[in-house]
Amino acid sequence: MKALTLTPEWAFAVCYLDKKIENRTWNAPIKIINQRLVIHAGKTVGGHQKKVIEAIDDVVECAKTDGWTSTVAIDRSNHARRANTYRLEKDGRVVMFGEELLSKGGIVAIVTVKGSFEPKRKEMPPWGMEGNKHWYLDNVCVLDEMVEARGYQGLWNVSDEKLRAVALQIGEDKVKFSGFVESKDPILCESCNGLPTRRDRGKLTYTGGKFLCSNCCLPSEEEEEKIVRNRMHAASMVGSAIAYIL
Ligand SMILES: [Zn+2]
Image (cartoon, rainbow, N blue to C red; front, side, top):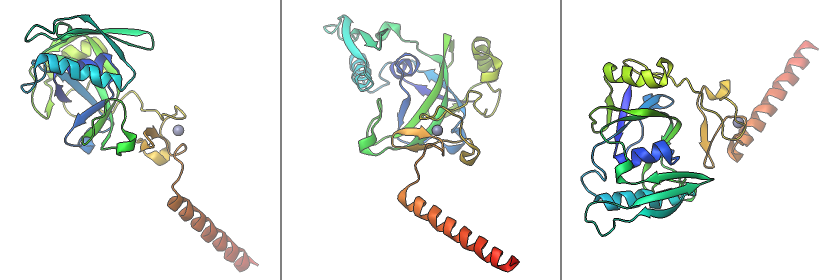
């Protein structure tokens, strides 16, 4: 099973702040679309480029695009390395977020990669950063306890030993030892809440900022023209068949 290492603050956002978009410079490889992916929290807040305080503030700013409001719960802004602790609120939910509250150096969640592409500027979703490929995450399953593991760059393979520890918490059916696993949690259409149709071949189409099944996707003008043309062709075929019988 493949894993992706995020810095601890972004891994936290995936787990607790509804961050459904992972911004990357590269598209998710096609073979991990619709597959489960392990989310690993790295050791260093902000990676090696950012100060802790900036890294925490970046997440808070991004959370605002998703409707979270923030207040500073504990102010350590005069301290050189420690960031503030925030109280984030959305739809009656309260999440405390700060450097000490982050899991570091281990597996924290398993998600499904729903799709991956760069959206149009007008369709920038919450948590989306312009100029990036967006990996759409779904079915986020957060572990009660972090499973310690070292992280790597890019997509990496999780050892069966670590996966066993993960499976103990979330069940064997969500974990595949060696190789890829089709998601057991079906991906649903964001309009009708239904499963992808047979025509979709298990994959939804991203259109107008939503993942939709083919029943909910309005065909484009060009496609509609084609459908009409096909229908007329079919009708003329029927006509000539009837003429032949007669
Ligand atoms: Zn639908």
